Length: 95
Image (cartoon, rainbow, N blue to C red; front, side):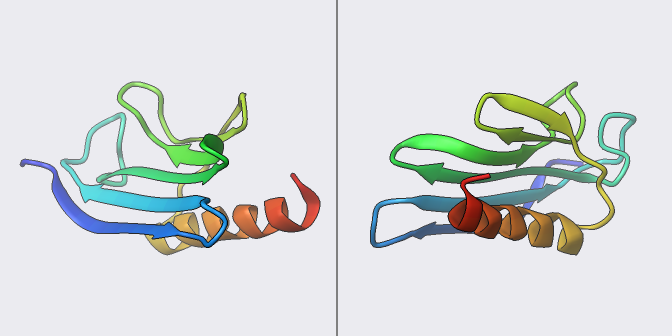
């Protein structure tokens, strides 16, 4: 099965920040047991401050600046909700 792009949103804020969400449907593998490949990123002043992805061989994880943490994937809806909640928290508290 070839990867099928099922969602791609890219939003530029007035202050130049970027929110980009990309999700592909892929074959279920040990690396992607949920059958999705994804990349969600929040860029502020040209620098990634939050990123959710599951790059090949690295599993589901989150980047907060230079820090990386594992992420427990439950569903696409929860993934996107968690991502936007982190963005909101960053805006309010600076994470």
